[in-house]
Amino acid sequence: MVTNEVHNGMSAAHLAGATWRKSAYSGALGNCVELAELAGDVVAVRNSRFPAGPALVYTRAEITAFLAGAKNGEFDDFG
Image (cartoon, rainbow, N blue to C red; front, side, top):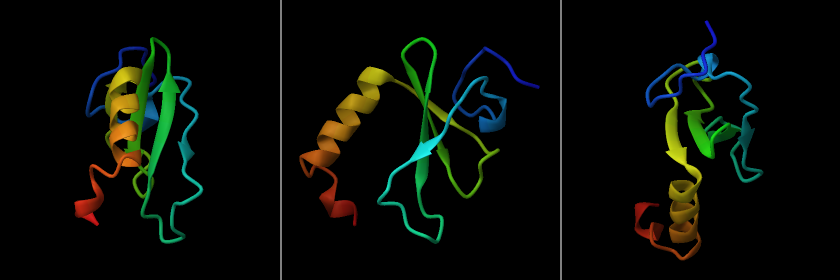
């Protein structure tokens, strides 16, 4: 069942019109996340190993803030 109602934790398979992309830096072992831009300035995130699993949903501003922090090294102590 595909729906237009988007919420955190919903099955990624139920996101209408989602085109999933992953980084060229993703490993061959499937250890990556994928992003899909959705209507309404919303971005969904899923685990590539479980494509029908739950998706987290963020605003574009939230994703932009996260990426800026990652580029600035704010999360370097996690790896």
